[in-house]
Length: 465
Ligand code: UD1
Ligand code: CA
Image 1 (cartoon, rainbow, N blue to C red):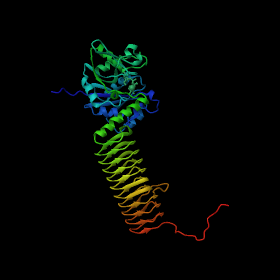
Image 2 (cartoon, helix red, strand yellow):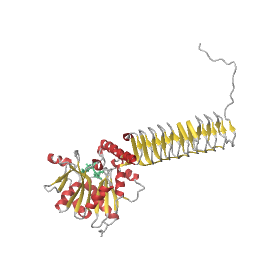
Image 3 (cartoon, protein in one colour):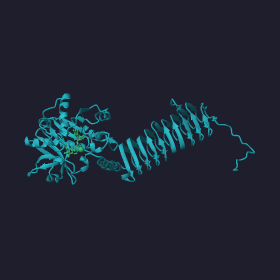
Image 4 (tube, rainbow, N blue to C red):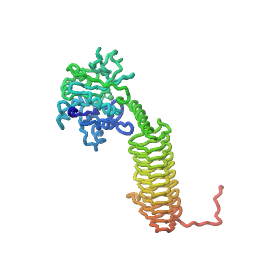
């Protein structure tokens, strides 16, 4: 029989200033793959069974909280001032007790808000290795231990302590096993150890890492899980580390897409900043950026230098070079671009064609409609089979309010027309090129809204004196 469920309290440390980032933005809000560092950690932790999430914030606390406003299962704990990682965890315990009873056998899992790529399986295994008489420590073997806490082991290879680099002797600095900062501890014993922490060290901080030597002295076992993937426990302390982790993250994301069958022309030149779903036989050319939630159907071809954010693009549509699409829905067999800008609230029905230098905002284009060159289409409901000529402008704004234009099916808008909203142009109507239309056009009628042409005979061109 399985033993009874042990509750896990996950404490994510996110109060530090992040001095080395040289930034006004709290460190954990800096983005990796378009999401704040802390969001990656919260996502990994929130899938753990029987866990409660607590986040220690301090520097920029309100900005950090605002970002997670809609996640009400998070318990926010303020650490003020920030006196070190041990102090942070010490603040967390009474704050947890204030909302729930901590059971005797409960485990506390410490995660760092600045270690974003930690995997759910890793922390789950680590948590399972902890018990009322064992601390589980996640460590890394690395050739580049600079700046990190070193794991000290005795002749029997048992962990005896963690020494921070700034406090380490020259011999200790040669150790290549480092502390990931991630550990799982028995809460009740931890409380006792935290109470004994001092700050007699080079940084004058209460180090969480000091509890390891205390645990050993108390006869507690230190179990280590050693991992070899540097990136999984890579902390972000400066912009250089952030950029290097970003490249690694991108490589993983692009490889996932390729594994799912997407053809990526150059995996080093596509950026994924959100949740992307692609169908079969999708092609992504170079310098494509996909952001937010993007769903791409079978056979879609995305050309070079295209930015797509929060959009659905259905099967066999083509997005040509240098197009920007934001918050739009594109049905199958459409062709968009090159150089088109599709703005929020746009819906293109099947077989729509949008050509170069066309901007569309908050508008619907019905099946097979076309706007092939230079146009602004704002706040319009356009039927099927409509042709919007080059240079057409939908004047949707009167300086105070936005108005809609309604265009029926099979309407033809001649080039360089100005449609002053609100206006209805009914089915089959034809607008002569160069017209300014400010009153409705009945079905199948021709609207000519321009000055009549005069030809002046005998006119002489000016000549130079
Ligand atoms: C820490 C570890 C080090 C480990 C490294 C791994 C300590 C003393 N050192 O060092 O052994 O190798 O992580 O990345 O634990 N934080 C707070 N409150 C504070 C101070 C820090 O919440 O008062 C948070 C930070 O926001 C950060 C995390 O704790 O998310 C780690 O702090 P940081 O200052 O980055 O520690 P490191 O120097 O990286
Ligand atoms: Ca760090």
